[in-house]
Image (cartoon, rainbow, N blue to C red; front, side, top):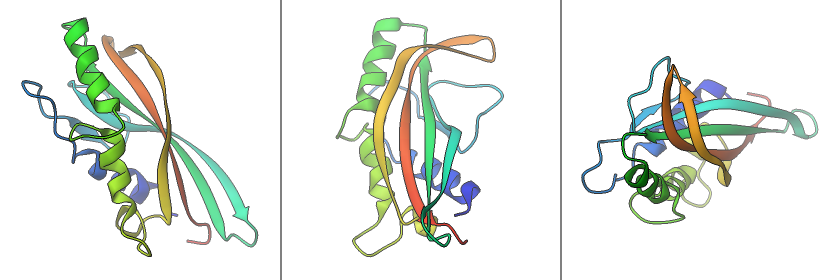
Length: 149
């Protein structure tokens, strides 16, 4: 699997969310940005498990992605974050990203992977990024694909 292509596919999928009324458009990055303009989603760390099937058949990538919301109004920011972390609905990152799985028999993320799923949300808390504070959370996304490419 081409890790860069998977990162780009995850970021492209996250762009499909519709932000709650009155909230700025979600800025999306396939990498950890130097500076953040909230609200923001970015693909951060990746853990790689090679050879989930023998002979370089399948690799498994576990991406930690972060969503950060402005700390200007803690209650409103947490409502926005809650909407993004919902399991379904127009603001759901889960729904937007898992829509990139493709139809049955199709590859995920525009051909970059075999399949993906959001495993969990973790770390719902205050984050510091480039000297500023944000309320945010992490999404852990499991991606599987061809280990030989």
